[in-house]
Length: 157
Image 1 (cartoon, rainbow, N blue to C red):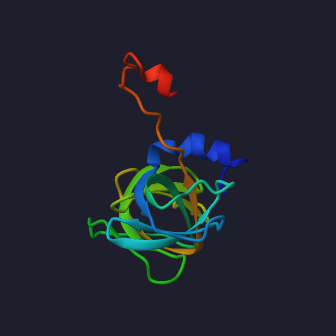
Image 2: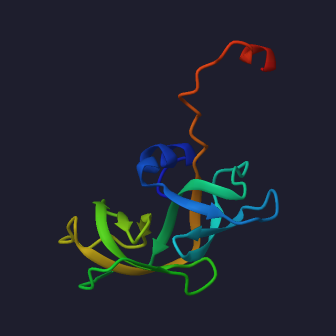
């Protein structure tokens, strides 16, 4: 993890949460299988007490890349070549020394084992394969808004 706390990580990278479909899993298990676009990825949930329930939700995906290469392809791609790993090609949306935000068809907050190349810039295409596990940070559901209370609603609360 690249922050001092789970809460700090979520606060910092919330804008990069990806919409996923969480598949049924053992209750209380930190291992999740998620459908991300057309790819099924295995994720280690970091938001104990494990908030994920089967269904649609938003998840910050945090893979770790041992190495990174520039790509001239200009095509977003996200594959799962092995359990708990992804191979991705995407556009660099954010750049720090050891963190990249990559749009590979879904936003990824990529932790780098080594610093990014000094001359890497926003808008470049990169490719990487992650190491296992991929960390996942479940965002709580958005509060429901827009429904006004009607007369009699208070009786049913």
